[in-house]
Image 1 (tube, rainbow, N blue to C red):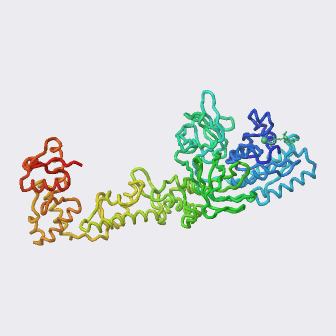
Image 2 (cartoon, rainbow, N blue to C red):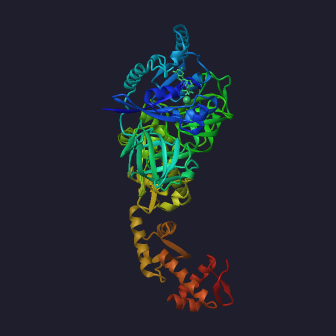
Image 3 (cartoon, rainbow, N blue to C red):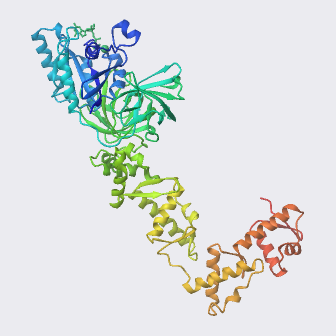
Length: 640
Ligand SMILES: Nc1nc2c(ncn2[C@@H]2O[C@H](COP(=O)(O)OP(=O)(O)O)[C@@H](O)[C@H]2O)c(=O)[nH]1
Ligand SMILES: [Mg+2]
């Protein structure tokens, strides 16, 4: 089976990278007129090389120090590197810088070419080779073959191909499912077809006709459709990881496309201006990376100004690691574990690099040991531990399964089993609401449960007579800004666990001891039913004394509980109305008074179809609750 891999060049300007790519492939990567005029690579160029079982997309980068930013945009997709050093020259500044950048980007494989071998005698070659060996010691190229080549005479080109093929075999295959992602490095228009964007596919695959998210770099995400695909000049139906891809997009104006934007599977990426990172300061740099230092962040193909906030120290010394956050000028769309490079604000030197721990982060307080411990767990080898840490940071709102792919580096096909295992182990909790399934850290669910139980405890203390409370009224007491459905799901969990009693409408703490006995509650139901049937001519409390075993005090408690639960309304001493009758009464009177010049007690009595015995206390009640006021012998609506 043929494998697709991206090979990138690296090395100082004029050391023969572009000439070597041409000798290998026949393609001149210097495509811009300015590049051809100056004989110098400015932006990345592309070529293709077939090596039997490996198919290489080659990205040729500029070596000049002014164009390191372009080198970085190209280097984001490299699987292996071709480090170039001219045999008639020496290890130069960008030889070192490129090698270091590739290390920061996590490269593990490659080959070194000693170019322009035709211009160096055996002695010079040997001297440069030993210099190169010294350079690569301790790096990912330490064991890499060094091949002398000449683009002019063809010397070493076949041997280089063999070494490249061998290096490709050493690149371990990526296993498991992936979501599609393509950091855009170039865009152009094709007459009649519209906008085409190119890049090295970072993960997954995409087919013609698929929908993708286009991350336009300003935080906007638009759904677009793949109209056509091209890889190395040939139309194809799909492109996948390790391939150079040109994607023809429907409905994307060329003028809005920039290097640094991303194409990704719908919902996979979320743009963010705050990233949490583990940061390594370059041992080559004379300066440490200090708290608040402004830097240039290179991630994917994007380049963004950012301010460093260090979480566990005030400065990361050269050669050391630290934990920090980057506050960006504009949002980028990234994933957990993604490597990045930081350069100084004036783009003169590389300061360091590292990996993303939180591609979508909230500001963390510095030196907060609890948060730091959890940030560290985001770098665990164990994906379940990373997922638990990511879920904790998602707080009481929880997260979605795809957020664990993006934010904890869990493989898409691992998420469901991992979440299942973590739920069984009591580390995560899944809460289903009508719109979605949310995954919460078990500790966050406990926090929510405690909040609900405490809110109820307070309500019980305030209303010792009420056996249950209105669910929305309980939940409104919590300081919770998230999805209401989630809080309802937590309440249901408490009901299922029998820590609460109640139903979809009303709840109480299971340990709350209601004031009424079971018999008394039955009587309460009967009283409430009797009031419901009687409307505005309610029974008298004394009618029920016999049912209460002749105990008037117990009967008063029963009425008080019914009133506390909102089932009855006390209109006057010994006069209760059913809550529905009381509401209807207010509506009826308000309507009539709004329509006319007020009404006497007798008129209100007739309006309500009741008797004088009830009409007088009802009118006084309406005055008391502020609905009406007296005007001579008439009632009128009270002003606000
Ligand atoms: N004699 C000789 N000259 C070379 C060789 N490779 C490149 N050059 C020359 O060196 C210069 C720089 O080459 P180029 O490929 O543009 O270097 P790059 O900046 O690393 O891409 C050009 O003038 C090339 O013609 C080689 O193998 N032998
Ligand atoms: Mg070049």
